[in-house]
Length: 115
Length: 113
Image: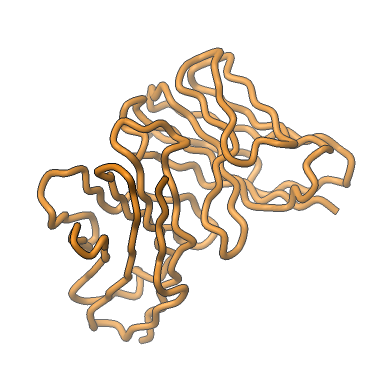
């Protein structure tokens, strides 16, 4: 069994300040973890993935995430927010070798960027 | 340009009517997926297909049907048996053994009144 919890439904930051979106997971197996971004009325786009290689993962648009097994966390960060980062972000957990029904999506975090 | 197309972007239907949502991909991916997205709910898997002429139910398949006659196409029919069909529907595809790395279409917003 697995689950994923995004700890904040909304996060608001000022442009140019750091972004932190929190994600905790639970999994019976060694998990694969992903972050996706969704701009309004659009499909989702993969930001980055963790699949048991380096624990610090770099993604597109300056985002990165760190896998911390001891804390069962996979928080998404960015040093400096841009207005274009305003979107919904989803943390996703999957089991290694699992099928599509092995993916679990978080409920999403809405990131608001203040000018 | 490679990608996934969904049509139409907005769809309106009367209660009791079946409606089919289109999904086409030219990424040469074996696997395709349908999700439903409701506000504050994240994504829920309706059906998925890993190969032509084969598909499996996801978490919320009741009231929906699919077909996979061609690699490029994976249409979803929302039947009158679906109790709450109004939602945003997303189609995705992936390489078969990279399930977590999915490419998504732009979505279809279905409103049933």
